[in-house]
Image 1: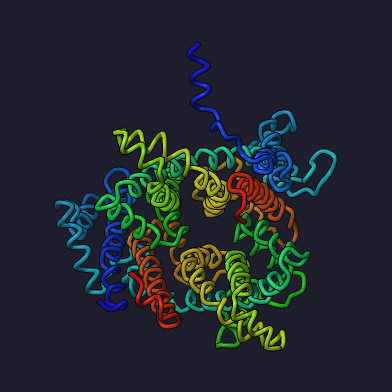
Image 2: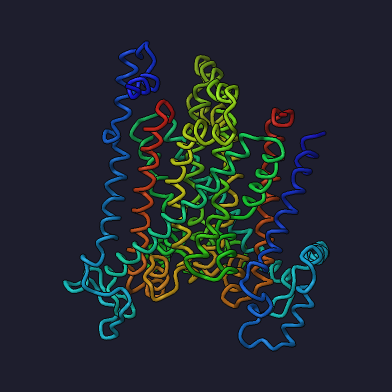
Length: 311
Length: 298
């Protein structure tokens, strides 16, 4: 079977598993879910309506089937607070989140590539040690706290960027989303720096680098054409693996910077005890990670033919 | 004189290792010579000391409000000032550390144990056991960590118990992956084959022969995992899903302070800085342990 076909087939159990976990979220609620969701003002009638709508009085398997059937029709359920469908809420909040994810990934690469080049250029030198110390401090940093520091420094003290918001138009987005994206990027960069530095050191030790050096290839050309090109592939994989972390970070950062993405939608819905929306957003996040991982794997296979013939 | 024979059996083989090898091993055992490890132990030691000795280090209560002394700057009475309800920031910091560190250190144990057991089973038995456990791993990692933690704690209801359940339900995955990988390599080694040939039970081989050889990696990972757990606990506290108020918690302190960011920046920055220092200390211990326990790799 082709690599693509095999990879798609592997997706099926994961996708089913993701829907099962999201489905069971409702059943983790202590007591009667309908009663809990509707709160203290629930009338027996509204509880009964919710029971019927979600099929809560049917056996679990049949409930799951109902859930899956609706899902396949694009129905993520009805928001209890906004009174509109969850899928329309998600769709309207998705662009801001995608902006943040892509912007942050780009910034993370822009931070990580030069730093790891500096570190790898002279192993165990002072610059190497300094760069390697960054992850130690960065890994334990609460992302939302870093956001506040950046707000305090660049938005309140120097007034370079807006304190919060999404901005309008591409230029507005680029300006307004810079601080939030930088926050996510700084949280992500240490992981990328670590892997990029390691793969650069491996490449630097390879025979073809020695050959290129002995041919008299200038240092700059050597680094960009020979080292960086080959070192970037493993780093892209690491970025792909950590995409879950990146996306999880956006949930927090969107709330710090008041960006109208699905992360903010999720937290707001938690405060409004809007279970269907929380459930729907969790599912969308899961699907997003699965799809991005698939994309990373496929692009990896396109870049490196060896992957396709593996196993 | 049976004790002598036992010692002989367990001792080093008759041909003693080369002197250089022995010296190297002795050097590796001198854990106090590892600067990273020492620095980490000192940092965590001081932080733990502060947290444990909290009642001795402050005369204030972390929860009693004093509305006559709100939002004060640092002074002789209030070392780090007071918050919007007049509570001493230094006191809340110490008690918050107590709560967050306790939860983090307990929370890391459950996924460690569960993940190690499942990883052992998957790696040792292979076949359908492996397939089922690894599919479960795939499904759990499909969700962003924070999304699933926040969703689970929300559904289960805020509080300490929910934090433990959520972190265990997600955290075991990394341990299972690490242990499974190690077991896959270790189970082909001669000592395992010898134990199998000797007719030892699978349980005994896993528990007595394999586990002591593979657990190191999980212990090293646990150090960075505690950092992640602390971040998760602080983040949950920040969103009001952690330990319910008025109990002091670093996350809720940061949340309380964010409304006063432009005028009283210390209310937000200091609790976060403490989290960073704890994270740094634990990362240093993790790196130091890695150097100590697997020499020759970096």
